[in-house]
Image (cartoon, rainbow, N blue to C red; front, side, top):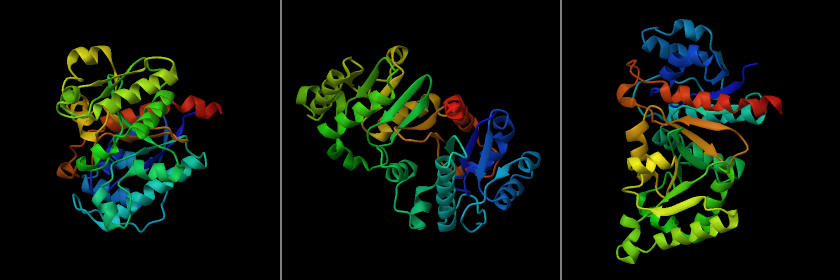
Amino acid sequence: MKPKIAISIGDIQGIGLEIALKAHVRISQICTPLYCVHLEVLKQANALLKRRYTQALERMECVPINAPKPTIKPAQVYQESGFYSYQSFLHALDLVDSQEAMGVCTLPIHKQAWQLAGINTPGHTALLKKRYQEEAIMMLGCPKLWVALFSDHIPLSAVSGCVQLEPLKKFLGTLGRVLAKVEKIVVLGLDPHCGDGGAIGWQDSIVQEAIKDVNDRLGRALFLGPMPADSAFAPHMRARYTHFVALYHDVGLAPLKALYFEESINVSLNLPIKRVSVDHGCGFDIAYQNKASPQSYLNAIKWLVSLSRDFLES
């Protein structure tokens, strides 16, 4: 029996619909995808893609959502498409909550379009935190390299104020619990060279204290660091370690995407549901040009399918 997976369709002005159409035949071999989108919208996308995916389209199971059917205007930011992607996400979550699907895979949204639609949340992860009242942890990567984010979609100017002892201890403790099978996790520093003993910053002393406290409570040296972020991803480090913690979004994701852009996925940890996403944005620069790679999407679906046994046996 193939697991059912709810697909949140993302912003229809970007590459999400192309990826869904392009990958359907392959993913339908390992799961039953439930697309939270109107069939008419998929037909629009297929027409813009010169009807290359008509056979796949005819086999796709669509779950209409509670939103007006918008018109596709490639690479444009619109309130209507922002609202549509938001409603698609909510409907996908409803399918998982009602156990009609074992997990949800999200295609990329456009955050400005959400704002135009009056949705006051910076993205998927923030909405998940609010909906499930849990500190969802964003972890991106692939089997070769995983990066968990202490702070995600906040301005750089706000990061320093977030690096406080108690929140960091709570984050590392939660991460250590959900990644209990991981042998070592490297924690990146915040200041250059981890502050050089206070010469160019002091906040990494907080990171060091948090690591010690959490390791003591876990009864093992799971977390290592803080390690200077400029050398943490050097080849000799990646040869030894596969899991890292970045205190700021771009510090961890820049090297990850430089190394494994198409392979990586975005996983939400510490939630009562299984959620995964592609590790890229809407791709407006290549929207409806048949250039989008479905590899991250395929990997995301495979990750969910790998977790399906527990769901099906529960």
